[in-house]
Image 1 (cartoon, helix red, strand yellow):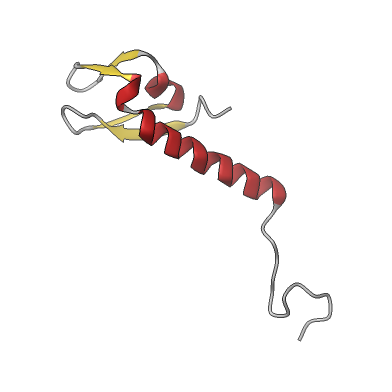
Image 2 (image 1 turned 45 degrees about the horizontal axis):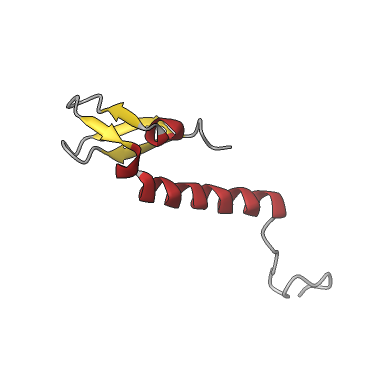
Length: 79
């Protein structure tokens, strides 16, 4: 679902930021656009998983809505 979300991760070789769609970091093999060294999906797997989980949580929050507590704990009769 989030394959087209742009993210930025550092190249493990040159340390420069790589700004690409999430799906780019999931490809079996890529090349760093800065240093031209080969990159494997496994080098980014842990970080990509964290990002996907954060995006999922954000979507769930937007769809489900944050619980409104307000000054009276969400009761209709308020202060």
